[in-house]
Length: 186
Image (cartoon, rainbow, N blue to C red; front, side, top):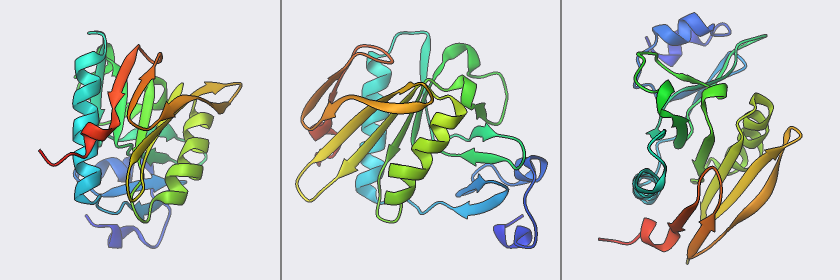
């Protein structure tokens, strides 16, 4: 099945589940959205950030990349694919195709050309509405990489830290992220 086959109607969650797992799509209010393939710098940063998190998080938490997260079912389904999520190990490996927003402690988006508005405005609003407690956004400019960390307070994300270089954060666990190491050519 391809995205072309679903252009004439809103896609149900059952139809979404029938599509191939390796789809480069997200489902937003029943409408398929093509997720642009990330550029190499984005992919490298994502792999390295996931590895850094995996090495620092407590054993009861797990890192997953490019997995479906069900944000809402009704009135029309929304399924997003954050670059990285942190979930309790207890939710991992139970055979399901996706996580629910209630499973996700942290959603991370790495901004790429073409995803700026979605990653900066749309997804944080969707993640907050779905109740995901932590949101990080990683951004590049010509000379550096930065991270903004947010925590959910009264249904809205509030900035709790970040910056460039080495960033220390206390939640969802005590972490030190060396942002410059995420894009080094080595």
